[in-house]
Length: 217
Image (cartoon, rainbow, N blue to C red):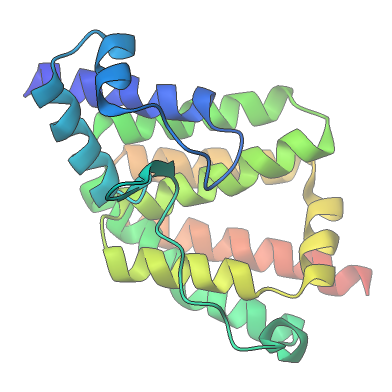
């Protein structure tokens, strides 16, 4: 079991390095097995586990791709009809619960990846890179909850957020020391396997971002 967990952690790191964005295609099973130095049987088990986490998805005959299987298209113009308040209400309804579940279910490899992401964010002052890391951190948390339906809802809420709101959040949050501290706090609550604390700290984190946005309007 420990060997499999170690291999899965290496596979997650490989996926992070290999793909620059959601939807990137991974090498074939034989190529992955050779690159990671594992058997074909082991790589199939790793792919199955990673798919269950929402890290990758597979299409028979076409290959293996980074990210969750594409959701059905959102209704036309939905993002244009969503107010900033509605977007934050949706995030507050979903992300604290995901953090609570992640605190109960996260594996050591999940926690390691989240901590690594937070550490990299602290050293990053380039906005585009920070934004990618922020999205990755929150999605790692959502994946660690191990609830396929809630993960899909998380992705849908993120996709439906109005573009102008996304830009404002990114502009106000990038490189902010207090945001980095908030990330540290809820990640460590997950690492401590404290569902109540993780849920509360995530709620406070989303509220903090909301205050930044509405305070800037």
